[in-house]
Image (tube, rainbow, N blue to C red; front, top):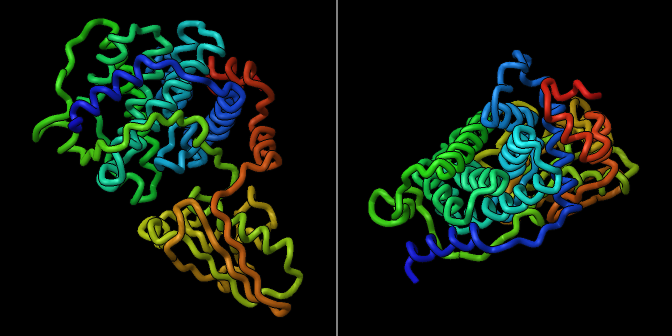
Length: 382
């Protein structure tokens, strides 16, 4: 089967095949989304009432707030941030249409599956040239909106075609490390909602979106090899540690050493994947993007959720890169009582860290969290 046929078949499957939902995990992802949006409000001090006039306005606002602290969820398999796109769409349609929380979870489950599957189908070549959170996220937003709005299968497929003809998103947004990926998320949200609404109205769409010099395969470096359905929900991980996601495992490794060591520290070496060196060289973006700062701050605060100051240990900390899996981290510490080394492949979601975040946002249950999204500021229902 050629790439075009694989692409068409995949979109059909995504629109037609039922999904098995993990409602407990969806509830966790949803509550974390509302917590992040609530805590992210402080990063946008403008008039919170401006974007409340409809589905798209509310969704864009929620997407910007949720991603403001760079602690929205992450899929380490396909390297995207799905939740800050999917949940704003589901919630905004839910608020407008008075949908149940169960219907929200249905729409989000399909959105997570579409986003992860499309990102995997597009592949590494695509990810090297485009911001995959934006491109796959637009498809995820389209599916989420299609399910929440009750589109037919045929309308859903048409909506995905409308979306496909309009995707974009520069990876430069991430490399500048100034927060611009938030805006990319907002654009993906808007496109997804517009695509679903267009299909609902019967708007025309491009039928052959894959082939030729103007098709997705050539323009977007789509590999189109892996058509495996990924549910996306299983792979979505919360970000609970007070630094960029690429550094989380190194912080956890450092915490393991901290619990063992009682001697004076002479040196700290942080080892991260060579694949993230271009982003995490400590040259731009401030302390948030400096792995050496994060690990040094951990030894100072002894709290992975509070990595604000690193004055005591930063001068002792160096940064190296090695051929280890993305998302992993290694830390080596030399002390006057011995040498310690720890490797962590994937940072865990410690309940105590999650509860600390949710308590700060005053998130107690999913129904209360849903109600909170019906007005701005989100903290109004505290």
